[in-house]
Length: 169
Image (cartoon, rainbow, N blue to C red; front, side, top):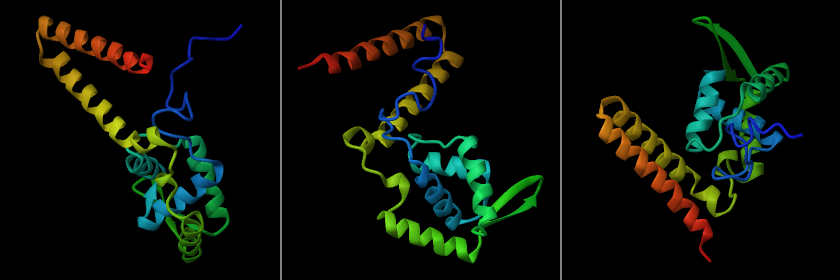
């Protein structure tokens, strides 16, 4: 029997969902090289930069970023140094050439993918959701019981309205 406890949870539950498709395997390599071409950073910096560039639609996992960084280092495209207790990665000359070549060959950066109308709007959608979450947290923290109840009712009504859009013909 299917374990339903985690269905629908997690950042990548629907690879073709609102944020558009996941990056393909080769794209993580290109994305890391392209981000490091902008300047050195540690693994978390790179993940955060990629999330920012996609408007929150894609954040690579540590399980894809760190092994790829290690591979790039083994290939001489990236070098790492220890700074303030963190491993900071930067491109070598060969890495800069590889980054430029891969971006040119792909016709742009991996985060500029065209995954259809939902992917094109993914950044706007992500920013809207984040704004709603921030506003709700402020109401929950500073509002009285009536204000919190009204905020919950608004969110529930919004959910129903979104499903009604899908039910339209």
